[in-house]
Image 1 (cartoon, rainbow, N blue to C red):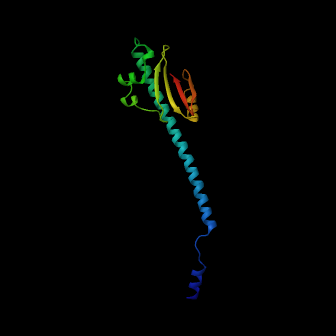
Image 2 (image 1 turned 45 degrees about the horizontal axis):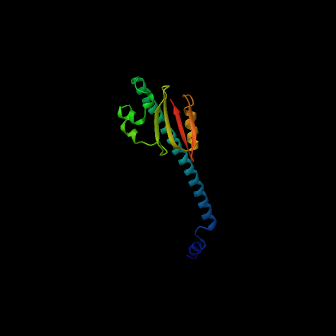
Image 3 (image 1 turned 45 degrees about the vertical axis):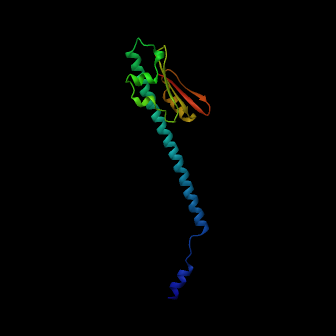
Length: 151
Protein backbone atom coordinates (compact mmCIF):
# COMPACT_ATOMS: atom_id res chain seq x y z
CA UNK A 1 0.00 0.00 0.00
CA UNK A 2 2.84 2.38 0.84
CA UNK A 3 4.46 1.56 -2.49
CA UNK A 4 1.40 2.58 -4.51
CA UNK A 5 1.11 5.90 -2.67
CA UNK A 6 4.78 6.65 -3.34
CA UNK A 7 4.39 5.90 -7.06
CA UNK A 8 1.44 8.23 -7.30
CA UNK A 9 3.35 10.91 -5.48
CA UNK A 10 6.32 10.68 -7.90
CA UNK A 11 4.15 11.02 -11.04
CA UNK A 12 3.89 14.51 -12.42
CA UNK A 13 2.16 16.22 -15.34
CA UNK A 14 3.97 17.35 -18.46
CA UNK A 15 6.73 19.84 -17.94
CA UNK A 16 7.34 23.17 -19.60
CA UNK A 17 10.05 21.71 -21.83
CA UNK A 18 7.76 19.00 -23.19
CA UNK A 19 4.99 21.54 -23.78
CA UNK A 20 7.32 23.92 -25.65
CA UNK A 21 8.71 21.08 -27.76
CA UNK A 22 5.19 19.94 -28.68
CA UNK A 23 4.20 23.49 -29.65
CA UNK A 24 7.32 23.87 -31.79
CA UNK A 25 6.59 20.62 -33.66
CA UNK A 26 2.96 21.63 -34.22
CA UNK A 27 4.07 25.05 -35.49
CA UNK A 28 6.47 23.52 -38.01
CA UNK A 29 3.80 21.10 -39.25
CA UNK A 30 1.27 23.93 -39.65
CA UNK A 31 3.80 26.03 -41.54
CA UNK A 32 4.56 23.17 -43.93
CA UNK A 33 0.86 22.46 -44.48
CA UNK A 34 0.14 26.13 -45.20
CA UNK A 35 2.96 26.34 -47.75
CA UNK A 36 1.79 23.16 -49.43
CA UNK A 37 -1.79 24.43 -49.58
CA UNK A 38 -0.74 27.77 -51.10
CA UNK A 39 1.41 26.02 -53.68
CA UNK A 40 -1.34 23.56 -54.60
CA UNK A 41 -3.91 26.37 -54.76
CA UNK A 42 -1.69 28.47 -57.02
CA UNK A 43 -1.03 25.46 -59.27
CA UNK A 44 -4.76 24.82 -59.57
CA UNK A 45 -5.40 28.45 -60.50
CA UNK A 46 -2.69 28.34 -63.18
CA UNK A 47 -4.19 25.14 -64.57
CA UNK A 48 -7.65 26.72 -64.64
CA UNK A 49 -6.26 29.80 -66.39
CA UNK A 50 -4.57 27.66 -69.05
CA UNK A 51 -7.85 25.84 -69.71
CA UNK A 52 -9.72 29.14 -69.80
CA UNK A 53 -7.29 30.73 -72.27
CA UNK A 54 -7.22 27.64 -74.48
CA UNK A 55 -11.03 27.42 -74.56
CA UNK A 56 -11.51 31.08 -75.36
CA UNK A 57 -8.78 31.00 -78.02
CA UNK A 58 -10.39 27.99 -79.70
CA UNK A 59 -13.81 29.65 -79.67
CA UNK A 60 -12.33 32.87 -81.07
CA UNK A 61 -10.48 31.06 -83.82
CA UNK A 62 -13.61 29.13 -84.73
CA UNK A 63 -15.64 32.34 -84.80
CA UNK A 64 -13.11 34.08 -87.05
CA UNK A 65 -12.99 31.12 -89.46
CA UNK A 66 -16.79 30.84 -89.71
CA UNK A 67 -17.38 34.61 -90.01
CA UNK A 68 -14.83 35.72 -92.63
CA UNK A 69 -16.88 38.80 -93.58
CA UNK A 70 -17.02 40.11 -90.01
CA UNK A 71 -14.33 42.53 -88.91
CA UNK A 72 -11.93 40.64 -86.59
CA UNK A 73 -11.61 43.74 -84.44
CA UNK A 74 -15.30 43.39 -83.46
CA UNK A 75 -14.53 40.12 -81.65
CA UNK A 76 -15.06 40.19 -77.89
CA UNK A 77 -16.28 37.92 -75.10
CA UNK A 78 -19.88 39.08 -75.49
CA UNK A 79 -19.93 38.16 -79.19
CA UNK A 80 -18.54 34.69 -78.46
CA UNK A 81 -21.16 34.01 -75.77
CA UNK A 82 -24.08 35.49 -77.72
CA UNK A 83 -23.25 33.44 -80.83
CA UNK A 84 -22.93 30.24 -78.80
CA UNK A 85 -19.19 29.67 -79.17
CA UNK A 86 -18.85 29.92 -75.38
CA UNK A 87 -21.38 29.19 -72.66
CA UNK A 88 -23.24 32.13 -71.12
CA UNK A 89 -21.22 31.85 -67.88
CA UNK A 90 -18.20 33.26 -69.71
CA UNK A 91 -19.84 36.66 -70.09
CA UNK A 92 -19.75 37.25 -66.33
CA UNK A 93 -16.79 35.03 -65.43
CA UNK A 94 -13.62 36.38 -63.86
CA UNK A 95 -10.20 34.78 -64.10
CA UNK A 96 -8.99 32.49 -61.28
CA UNK A 97 -7.44 35.44 -59.42
CA UNK A 98 -10.64 37.50 -59.55
CA UNK A 99 -9.54 39.86 -62.34
CA UNK A 100 -11.28 40.57 -65.60
CA UNK A 101 -11.06 38.64 -68.86
CA UNK A 102 -10.93 40.60 -72.09
CA UNK A 103 -11.06 39.19 -75.61
CA UNK A 104 -10.36 41.06 -78.81
CA UNK A 105 -9.52 40.29 -82.39
CA UNK A 106 -6.94 41.85 -84.66
CA UNK A 107 -6.80 42.53 -88.40
CA UNK A 108 -4.12 39.85 -88.60
CA UNK A 109 -6.71 37.27 -87.51
CA UNK A 110 -5.28 36.83 -84.02
CA UNK A 111 -7.38 36.38 -80.91
CA UNK A 112 -5.99 38.41 -78.00
CA UNK A 113 -6.95 37.25 -74.51
CA UNK A 114 -6.09 39.47 -71.56
CA UNK A 115 -6.29 38.32 -67.94
CA UNK A 116 -5.90 41.14 -65.45
CA UNK A 117 -4.96 40.88 -61.79
CA UNK A 118 -2.60 37.91 -62.17
CA UNK A 119 0.26 37.82 -59.60
CA UNK A 120 3.84 37.88 -60.87
CA UNK A 121 4.77 34.20 -60.34
CA UNK A 122 1.71 32.70 -62.03
CA UNK A 123 1.99 35.33 -64.76
CA UNK A 124 5.46 34.05 -65.67
CA UNK A 125 4.25 30.44 -65.58
CA UNK A 126 1.42 31.32 -67.96
CA UNK A 127 3.85 33.19 -70.18
CA UNK A 128 6.08 30.14 -70.47
CA UNK A 129 3.06 27.88 -71.04
CA UNK A 130 2.03 29.90 -74.10
CA UNK A 131 5.52 30.71 -75.39
CA UNK A 132 4.80 28.91 -78.68
CA UNK A 133 1.88 31.22 -79.54
CA UNK A 134 2.09 34.50 -81.43
CA UNK A 135 3.25 36.45 -78.43
CA UNK A 136 2.52 36.24 -74.74
CA UNK A 137 3.53 38.92 -72.31
CA UNK A 138 3.24 39.74 -68.66
CA UNK A 139 2.73 43.43 -68.24
CA UNK A 140 3.05 44.89 -64.76
CA UNK A 141 0.00 46.87 -63.75
CA UNK A 142 -0.07 48.03 -60.13
CA UNK A 143 1.02 45.18 -57.79
CA UNK A 144 -0.35 42.47 -60.05
CA UNK A 145 0.33 41.52 -63.64
CA UNK A 146 -1.63 41.38 -66.81
CA UNK A 147 -1.29 38.31 -69.04
CA UNK A 148 -1.83 38.97 -72.74
CA UNK A 149 -1.97 35.93 -75.03
CA UNK A 150 -2.18 36.25 -78.82
CA UNK A 151 -3.48 33.06 -80.34
